[in-house]
Image (cartoon, rainbow, N blue to C red):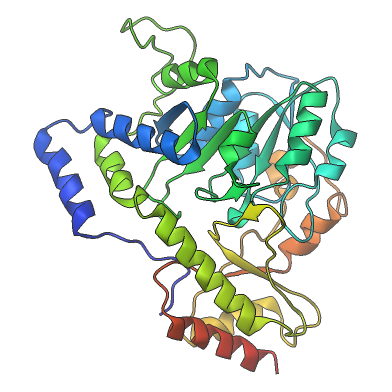
Length: 368
């Protein structure tokens, strides 16, 4: 079976975990600090705070802005639910802006129309590993005195205009969930050049505790700490980031070359100035394709290829979101259309060319 992702655990990873287990110090410690140092190097930032999930990273970053009830955060309607949920966790309101058809990311040309006196930040999502148009977004943010936080949970290793995404935003957030490009099983991190945000994050992940005076608490916080056990997995993996990202790109180029010009099959784009991390290779199955998306998923699975739909509906359709911000069909036409078309194919760095060719062959047969 060709899976949508493959978890990589080698002898080095086993040895690193074993060292931590034998050390007797399993909680947040030196391995977490070392992972933070390496994340700073990769993202060219001054600070990094490792936490226990990408969701925790987003919540921490948003909370650092001091959001309160009635505040608004502009974001995309097409993402994993954590993007919107973490805004709600800060008692703020998500304000959705439709996406661009070619990139799956928020359309910067639509952002200003949604800015109000209540708007405090823009929460971007670098979906599938492709960075947003940060030149335009940062210009808008500066004009309106807004912070920009990137949900880069799928985009570690991606860049925009030859700079890491973190250099374009106030805070960048990553996930190290088991299926991500760099994984710890569970984990996340935020990176920033802002010392105030960093110091807040260090307190917030430990119940708001002062980092120099134990049992002095400055504000509410959460148990968002990671562990040295998980960090040791991340450290064993992170040295492979550049190599694995290039392999993902190689696999994507092979798929694009072999799948182009099939009616009804729209291939992913890489826009000018972006370097894609290809967390997912996401195609679109339009009405011109001979069979429906669900039928193609079934056909591929029957022939040994797993695919997946990320995501089958827009966030504003979710029941708890509709209670906060009314939704009617057609409010986000691009995102709504694409949610019915998207299909992610395996692109992970451990794919063999023969496996890619099998996928291509199956899709071409289905297209006849």
